[in-house]
Image (cartoon, rainbow over all chains, first blue to last red; front, side, top):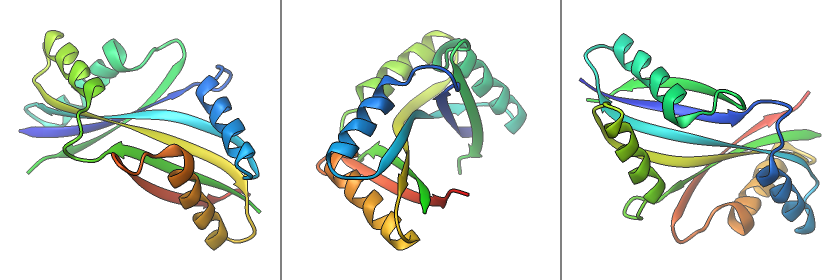
Length: 83
Length: 83
């Protein structure tokens, strides 16, 4: 079966977020009353797996092995079966 | 009132996606049956606005002026009022 895993990777609280800080500054310079910006990344991975449970386990593995840095990132996974 | 706008910026179909291609290759090398990876970015912007309608209009402006490239990006906005 074909699955899509939507994996959102974000910085854990307490880690510096230079891109968010720069974006905040730019938006303030443009005149918006912005107090903070958080930046995260979403990977939508299209892949094969036998069952939804296996798809979820594989997406978890991919996150740990490649997509997220376990020291500084949090991640969330949602799985959709493709028709 | 305080609002958070979650603005997801993704590449329009047909535009090259080098980060997704590299990620696909890496996941295949790690042994996963991955056929494609799409990458998008989520900006969560915390800011002041008078009403939800104004918050939405401002988030739309921020997307057009700074966060998304109108030539190659799509974006979606969702607004949450902060308590």
